[in-house]
Amino acid sequence: MKTIILNQRKERDELLSRQYLTRRNCQDTELLLGSHLIKLITGPRRVGKSTQALLLLRDRNFAYLNFDSQPLLDVWDANLVIRMLDDVYPGYEYLLLDEVQNLDGWDLWVSELYRLGKNLVITGSNAKMLSSEMATVLTGKFIQIEMLPFSIEEFFDWNKIELNKPKAGQETDVTVLTDDYLRNGGYPEAVASRSLTRSYLDTLFDSIVWKDVAKRHNVRNISDLNDLAMYLVSNFCNPVSANELTVELGFSSVNTTKKFMDYLHEPYLFYYLARYNKKLKLMKKAPRKVYVVDNGFVAAKSFSLSDNLGRLLENQVFIELVRRGYDTDRTVFYYRSRNDKEVDFVLRKGTQIESLVQVCYDMSSPKTEKREVESLMECAEELECRNLMIVTNDDERIIEKNGYKINVVPIKSF
Image 1 (cartoon, rainbow, N blue to C red):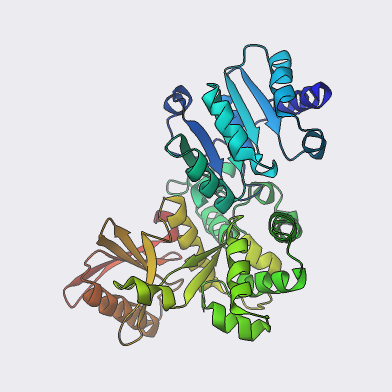
Image 2: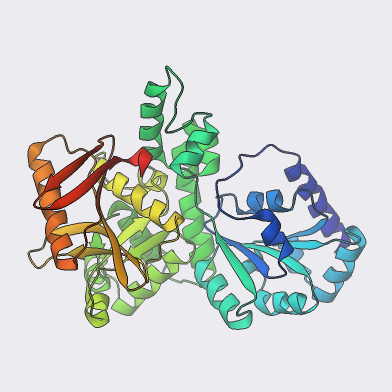
């Protein structure tokens, strides 16, 4: 056990020696570390959770355990581990537990560490397992920090260009990079090596489906699970229902479809957006729109041969809303009017509708503009909302019509 922990210390020190991009967030590091609440960093695989945790603790005396290690899991002995940590990291102030969900009964062990007064930083890649188990065993004892792939601002930070204040001569670079991000997404390792993006994300997608879903849930019919994942990534931004998917894919039951859909959300691969309705019962019956955590997965896995720029932009806006803290259960929805006109996002604050956001890649055609504006206004009238926005690729202006004022903004300014 001591050899394993010593090897992991070498791994930790090597990781700490590297240069990293500082991610944009609103967390106060001193405030976080000064709190004895558990710091829970969650998000998809390979988005930089471990890096963020290491940067958070870089100048501190901290111990490190990486549970993405079969040797550690094979010889696990909780009491022995605590003794060996004291030997390898004498006097440590913080304990970093990386990908802790791989340890059976991790929540009870973490609860014990908390009672012992350990100041814990935890990372994990499974939304349901982490949130549900933390909520039941450690209610009120943790702070959750959710991480996603690079935002467009972080992508520009990586490329050393200020998104909204480029230097003279960088305007073309901004256009090229904005399009690159739209098509290929913001996974850190893919951003660092664009020529390998599609092969890397193809492998990562499969790894999430097989390792984080099929293996964890002991799925026997892996072929059906994979078929569903491929269908969802090919139909991103479209409404789907478990009943229709069951028929379309020839599954054995609607319950199996629902279960597989939930499984694919757990590792942050897909999100499902409900259709807004004041009546909860009707909202639950309506089809949900499906979104994927990063546009790069679409290029890597989708069967579609077209560019789908409009849907890619909509998916990008959705993930940005999630990054800003909007929740698909309570604060962000889509909406269809009585005449079947649609608005892409209804943003709610408390019980009030805060704003409506429509997404349209290119509004240069008068016909397209008319369609998008009329849909937005009709939904605005039914929902009694005056704060209206259309997000585009590069258009920026204000549209005033029928007493409504609509802000048209480019994605870089959203």
